Length: 482
Image 1: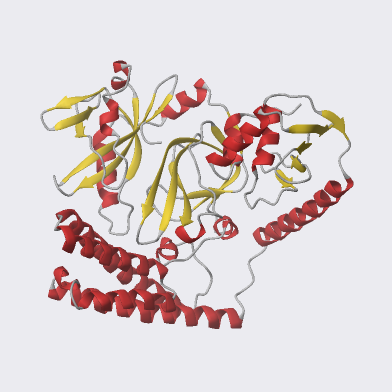
Image 2: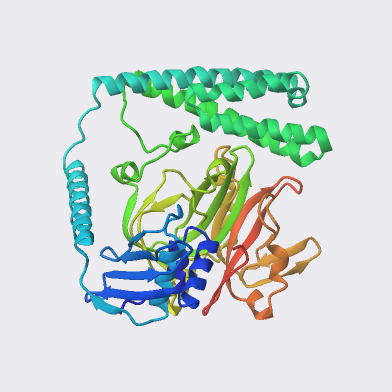
């Protein structure tokens, strides 16, 4: 019989509530029939429900990393609570009668295999031969879009230029409606990225006018600098592409900064994918971005082969919360057939389709610890060079080997074996974690361990600081941010 873990069930669930409801159905013995195929690739359950007829739910594990769930219930959640309940029945190792795989399932498998084979053939052909040149019509359309983006960027450049000359405070009053109108117009220029930055700028200035908190003013200045850098670099990038008559999509981070959305196939075609990766999640957090009107679920992973710290982002717009499943903390090692990395520096974004989840071993933790650097000066220099880029993310996550974490006159401090120190603090916008260090039940965790920390620049103290995220010991991964 197939082996499954609760972590795998939680990973398949669209949200924790659906998993909890599925667990309850299984605990209540809601299934009146359970069947499985002799090869353990197909499971079926008949579950009682609120409807007149029982619901038939199935799980097809022909592709183990991405099983297919089907259910006769009317729920719009996928997989639904009945499908998850079936997984809990498997977890509990309940009795499943052996059955033949239904004919309709076999036909659906054949169709899926044909689609997968065709997609694989297309991908292999694209990798084996030189990609065909972009058609004349596609070139014309892309050139037209880029020219339109340049027009919009010029409007933003002029706005920023006028604002800087007049002073940031002048964005308020009668000028504020004009900036809101410009933000709306940027949608017509295919510039959702600059549009979001302009939204963030106006939101911070509005907040500053209400409470006079200097933090809003500082964030507005940062946003303005980022907007200016983006306009400057994007204008040069688009102009160069137009002059060179180069219409192919290049792996450039400016594409996403302007609002473009990468397809996994595009990232793979650009050479930004890695086969058969094992990644362990070291932290997880959720923030709400008012400028985007979206919740962002972020998972922090470490590649167990290279030690690269990378991030996953799951965007959940307010208007579509019912239809976009929330990500959650994942305990275990993600076995990914192909991980696609976004272009850029720092902690790159990564995406994949399908995965297996296995338990973390002592060898995994030892491997994770081996990637830590005990030279704090080198890590700090790397972080400073990265953070000074106006388009960089506001933090850089790194693994640091420390001798001790304790309290000093200036506050919590991390000290490495060579005597170098750095202040620990809580980066604005993320959940506080520093105080949790001193609430740990075992004081030995603050000595001779590995810290996953986020370097960031504190504008109040004008110094580089480190936000504690997780502690890696020889026996455990202790999350401070989850």
